[in-house]
Amino acid sequence: MAKIYIALATYNGEKYLPQMLESLLCQKRPADCIIAIDDGSKDGSAKILNEFAQKLPLKITVFEKNQGHQTAFSTALKQIADLASDEDFVALADQDDVWLPEKLQVLEQALEGSAQDLVFGDAEIIDALGNKTADSWRALGGIESKLSLRTYLTGYTNVTGCLTLFRASLLSQVLPFPEGIPVHDQWITLVAAANHGILSITQKVIQYRLHGNNEIGLGHKNTWSGNLKTNNRWTKNILEHPLFNRLSKQDQEFARHFESYTAKRLQKGFLPGEFFWILKNRKDLHPHLRHLWQAIPLALFGTIGVPVATKFFGKK
Image (cartoon, rainbow, N blue to C red; front, side, top):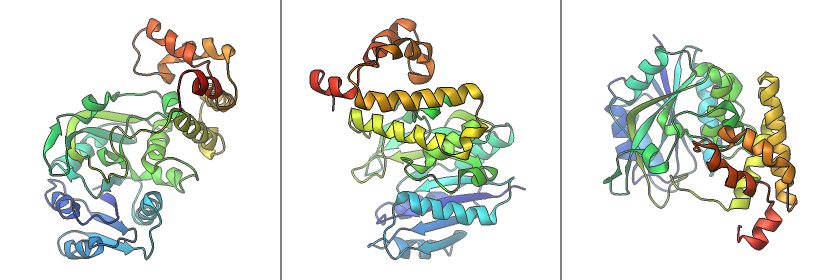
């Protein structure tokens, strides 16, 4: 029987961590091993983990100094890679969410019945006090249930790590995380999409907590030019990674063009030659659009670079 491993990162999370760990205790399909990395917490997070180690299959590592969210998860996943077999499964856990009792059971059953490498569900939204504020994470954020591989290549994603379960066989390709990627779960999602694909289910599997100290929360905003820089770095990382060589020639060409396009857009005022390329690839660049006429204004704006957009349109 396949095992389920959980990677959990904690940092100054004593306020919500007990409730999160209690929700792991209540899983209808319990995890076989939980790798917990405390990232140099100054509060009682490490103590709470040790207390729950009497009830849960926890293996705990405590960093003396804070090394960052991504390093903590990377360390946890490396430990799982040393323990797990290819047929096992891996889940990612945030310290402040609440897992619904059927989460692992539902996601495991979905993956066992499919050929895909990763499955993700939906979530209820709760506030700092645990009050439900929205029935659906996807509905609240306008999240698409399915995206193309090319859309993932641009840095756009519809997957949040705490909603997922993925095959441990992916870890050999996921690790080590490339330097400069925005978040670890975005990279895991891309690797899964480039292999056997991603499965989406509509069932809610967690209560996703939004509060002032979230590491990454729904509605997190960057500046427009900042997002463009992030997307350019993301695609540049892909071009330099062995994963790129496993893409089809058509997808490789798309990734090269997108990286070049975003780099030029950061520097030049106008890029009129990109208009028809944007229209042609509108479903990958703007997956939320349903009609050609909706894409035309975006394609026109897509030919305007940062210098002009900043000066004349107030974009930052």
